[in-house]
Image (cartoon, rainbow, N blue to C red):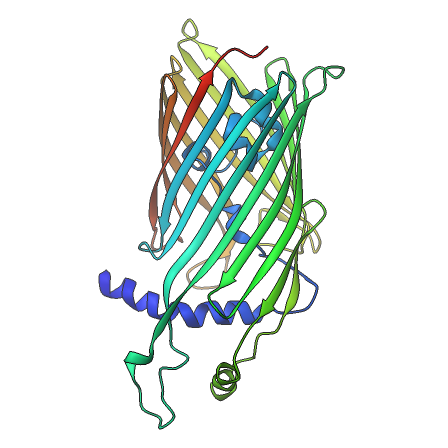
Length: 369
């Protein structure tokens, strides 16, 4: 396993540059742009198959649906999560902070980092005489970073209606070779009616723009030419809008000791045909389903189905429907909430499970005015 992980690490440089080079078409809408923003945050949401735009409350809503910030029952909330993928090669970190401004508004900030650190730079592996010299290998980091600044406000004249939005700043870097700055907007809405929670979340609603700037030395360019690779160039990458519709309902049983919450999300993309359950040449839709069972507001059991896709079978002859199951637990005690999720990020043949933990801390708890 360790040898396999090390081998994977040494191939990462080539894979990153191949993926990066393939995306360099000026001003094009990319189907899988800024994918690190689609991983999700919070073990509760991940355990529920990422079906969370309707039921997310408090600080975590800064990511899922900023309108959910208005459900915050505390003056300040802090959220934390750390996860590692692919034998620890990739690391994903989240920190969120939300603050109630007044009885009708809440503000917050969400910070996300997805990084692959200490990637071997093999561009100088071969010297001028054609000799392989492993001492010439250096390292660099490939990092995706995002800051989401959120604001949510209720509308007293429209009972049950809550609105929110995010302003996103994105910074992506590939060591000393180049980087990008990006900006975008999200908008979210929730409507509560007789215990039902309806939600709509528009991500990258105006299109999110990443402007890439490449800095390659002449020596690096010559290496690309000598190895038959295309030289990356500065470009503009556009992330197309995505609309997520959600509905959730919670019921109480056994003298309110048992709570059961179910949620369904419909993830709609508009960047061409994807391998989803429903699709056209322009629009694709993928469902996500989540369930949460709680006892006395103290302990929770969760499950969800997400990433429902149409894929070719092992023989490559027939399309089959694949589903990613997730499970999790949660414990809430006074001001601390600790959540755990077991998520399947693998394929049908070799499942790679990730153990995700997240923490939420309530500060200056007080009733809403």
